Structures are given as C-alpha cells and as structure tokens.
Length: 316
Image (cartoon, rainbow, N blue to C red; front, side, top):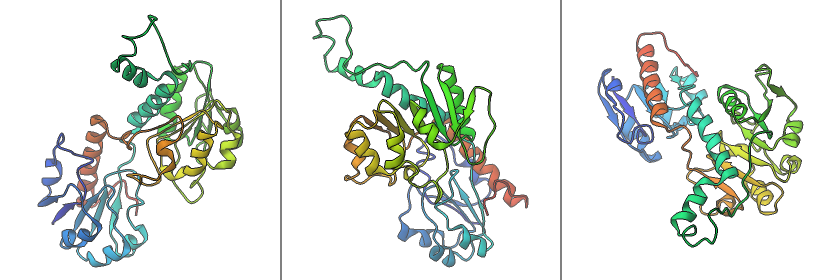
C-alpha cells in the first residue's frame, strides 16, 4: 500500500527517522504540501499522514484508494471527519505525547513575564551592565510567584501538569473544567467568572470548540485584575485577539504569554504582534525532541494497529 506524508518537516526537520513508517511499505515524504498538490500527491495512496495540511471533503472524494488518515497531532480539525466517516476512512490522532513539554513552555512564558530573564540578558549583551553605575539593575518589575493564584481553564492532562508546576512554585491553584471535576486537594474548582476575577495568572488549556471560541473576550478580560497575566498554549482562537490587544494596550491587564494565535503564521496586521507586554512564541510548546520522538513512535504504532485490524486512538 502506498503511503504519503503530506507535511513532515515540523515533526521531523531531520533529527528523527522515518524508518518506522517505511517498514510498512513505500512511503513518499513531503516537507510541505500546498492545497493544490494534495490530490496529485496522494491520488494513489491508501494511507495519508498529515499534521496541519487540510483534507477537505472535496479532496477526500477524489482520493478513492484512501483507507487511513493518521493525524500527526492531537487536534483533528484539519480533516473533514464527517466526509472521512462516510467513506469508511479510519482517522487516528496522537494524544498525550507533549503534556510535559507544553506545561514546561507555559511556565517558561510565565517566568519570562515575571522575571524577564531573556530581556535582561539581552540588555547585558547590549552593554547596559557594562555602562551601569550600579552592580545590579532591572528595568522591569520583578514578580515572585509564591503566594499568587494560578487559574487553569481546562483540567485535562496538560492543565493538571501545569497545576503541579504552579504548586511547586508555591502558587495557589484554581481550576474550571467542563469534563474534569476532580483533582488534588490543593486545587479549588470554581466557576469561570470566579476564576477570572480571583486569579493573578489565567492559563488556557481547553480544546477549541464552538463553545470555547473567543472564550477570552472583552467581557471576561474586564473581570481580570489589572496586574493579572494571561497565558495560552492551547489554541489561538480561544482568544478574541483585538479585545486582548485593547486590554493590554490600555493597561486593563498587565501582560500575556502566547504560543498560539488564531492564524498561523500570523498576518502582519495581527494586533497582538505589537501589543504592550505581549510575548509570543511560534507554536513551539509541543516541539521538544522528546515530545516529537514520542509523537513519531505513537504514529507508527497507530498505523501498525490499523494494519493488524485493531486500530487505536481512533477519532472516526
């Protein structure tokens, strides 16, 4: 059976091996695939693996040999799942591969917003310390985390991991979740409005659904403390970006750390790109070497299970 990887570069820019997939048969691997090339490249494939390259209903209708789609990620919104189901195409995903890495990035964003280590290292490189009249300086407020309150929206695997890290820094932890109501005794579950009003840091760890799109809007930003920080390592469209830019630029909240945006890469006009005290990283929380190696391993095992007649991690 012919296999095609439509966009393998993000998963494997050269430091991993595709041999696990190649053991199952001929495999064509493309770093990136424009929408117009999806059907020509995958026309004869029974197996497609994709990360962010979309597979639409119109495309799936033309891919008649297709039996299996392996999504090289947890989110499956890039595939028209209804169309795949109608055509009896099995779709799998890769859950839980990056839990610790995403939690780590969440705290990295928080630490940079509160301690400004990267910023001050750059000022030293620029010669500020050499020219300083004092043996120590800082040009932004330095904030201790112990005793502050972390509010976690979404208490799945990543939310729980972030709660553990926050507790290790001595933070109080609030949480709200549609699906999980249990947790350590140190975590207090509260309604969403209470969480926004009481938290010094609000961190988003929920899936993107019609109900959660623009979960963070002007009304909820107005609930937050003026000194509060907002973190998002989940999905960009959870945030109404113009509303957040307005809140940052007006001082309604103190800062934001974002690893995701509503459109990626962002257009030059995205208002958050030059918003006050807004730190943005390029959707890299998932991408540690360890996490990508786990992703590759699980993707291979998903395909192995499908070929053996016992598919796992099935979305549809």
